[in-house]
Image (cartoon, rainbow over all chains, first blue to last red; front, top):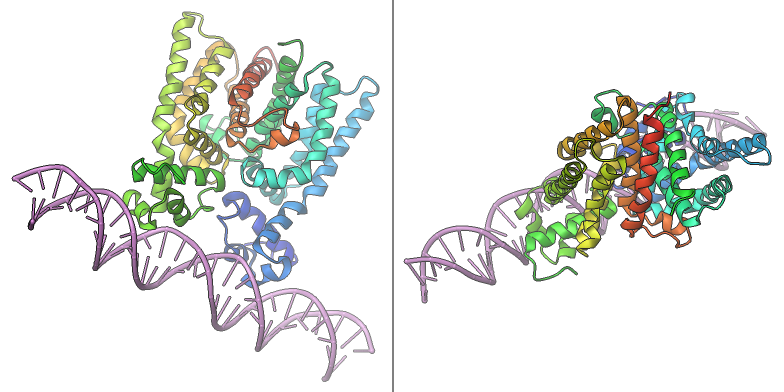
Length: 215
Length: 215
DNA sequence: CGCGCTATTCAACAATCGTTGAATAGCCGC
DNA sequence: GCGGCTATTCAACGATTGTTGAATAGCGCG
């Protein structure tokens, strides 16, 4: 099932990550996770405590790395842009491209993790509880950069535009294969690069339309 | 808890709708639903069969009405536009505005239902199984209208743009209150009208940027 | 009133859940 | 090779789950 050579706690996290992303917190039992990891049920409790602690551990395992990658991308494009600051496209690129590490590394775990983020972010129950704590600081930094690239924009408009960006991204990360069906195979959910190639100009144009001159 | 005068089957659907939207299919027990509806546990099984049949019944109860409202809106704007066809903004407006009936009618049930649609659409497990069957035909009709408004657009680009629209809409319907927190109360998740006022020009500009002249 | 039917409740079932305490295995330092 | 510690498994607990069959209530119709 899972790579039998890796340490067992990691195998448990991997299995939990994949199953939680697919079925949600309540849709997965500790026994399913243990079976997929090839270990006994009690081992998950031994290493991670209660079920919810395991959920939290899965959520937090890759968060710091991901945040750092996105922060680095933002700072790099800010450094290279100099005084006038980066363009809209460059900022959004820094927001999205680091998420491709899923397929860069060929690690399926990253794909599952991003789907889990999508599940949490779209959930009225988990979203408010879990997203703010880990991602708010970074998001605010990105919004500040966007505000600088759109002088005179109303803050309200900026947030609504970010909301649209976040939604498009969330559905992408969820990997629902719905676009595969709709397009008759023309588009593939797994192809994050194609998704971002279309999302970046799409979102940049949206920001400009809503946050510039209008209203 | 629930309006005690309505017929019991409807009260069960209402309770299930609200709880499924908040916690997902596996996050809700029949006993919670029954308690919220003020009836015995066995009554849900008596009227709707298995738990999954109840889930399906909730999902389908409002689908036909919703589809008809959106189809009417599309046909009306096509009729009024005449030969050249409606603008991008008019098509997207027809796609989104009917979803405001949630707050038009003041019926909280519609708000829960739309959050349930968001939950299903964003789920890698439920999405492919349940969305296509009920919504594909209508979506394809909208995409055809968009294609006509964007002559020369590549089909692949059209579907990716629709994907972005669908994502922004899905996160809006999920009502996660995340934008409320991020914006410090400046934006409110419940205010669908403000969400669509920003989403329509945002998405229209995105379609134009990606599907016109580019690449 | 009383029959017949539907709606609703009651009570209970086997199955499965998360969790835990005791038992076993693996392994490093001495 | 043998104590000591950690990792892992085994076995079992009470609680809760979806589901069902029997019992009860409600009610229209003759």
